[in-house]
Image (tube, rainbow, N blue to C red; front, side, top):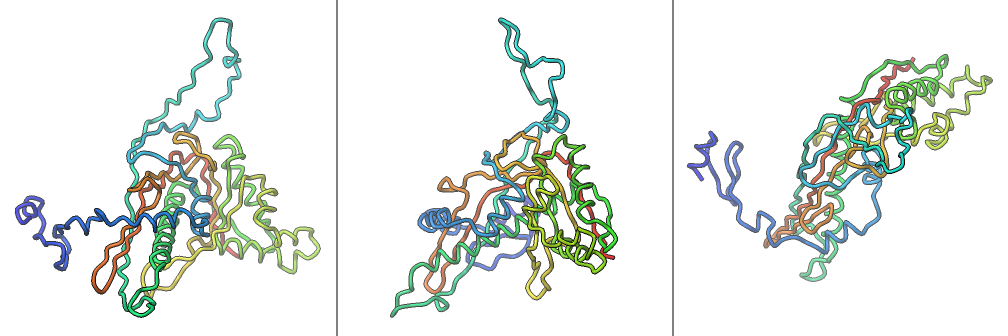
Length: 334
């Protein structure tokens, strides 16, 4: 181990069981490497419970597609909405149909392995006599999965923001917030080619500012005051988009740090499909590859005398195959 550490330019090596030191190699035996410790019953529990709010939000924001660990796709930025205006889609007698092939840049990517371990002290678990009450593993595994999903949502929102084209707007009693949202959608539509795949994502503070603008006293007799009461479905119909999502989740980056909105005074419009293909023209999607056991999630349980380590992990990658049409508005409240 020390020879390997020296070769890699690290400070030293430790064996699992010692306290790991930053910059050193840690050697793990098979049990710490999760071999033989997969908890299939808990994994099945995760697969069988109804989707949590976090999972439902993740799937709506970044629709998922199963891939291999490594995957390739052709970027179809300017080809997905081509139309055969020359009638070349009409087959002549004895001829073959026109062959369609995306000729954009071929991208190679890979899913990432993400997981968390919770060390549960046996003193904290309910007991009957000397026996721990069963079922605690399911609750802890579900809590870990939800935490991993929240991390993916924050990660995906950062990717979406980095790929967007921004315009500054103002919400007030004298502006029309929904008209400004329509203008954002139209920018996406003309860049992308259609609105059927477009969804609008609204930050919590932007949603509150929109409501405040329409609830202002000056709106009372303008005929637009009722916009303040729009549901997400009503606003989606008004904007003629696939879906409107209000992102009202919060995040906390460290213990003791104040919680903040995952999204604040911003809106986005971008293209997604709920049944993605690897090379469809949607703007953002989430690739996932099966982990041990063949599903999307895996659970390992390692029992010791006085505590148990429970680990939940998955392999996925949120990526932006095409930034064409991603639009953002940053809101100022006046």
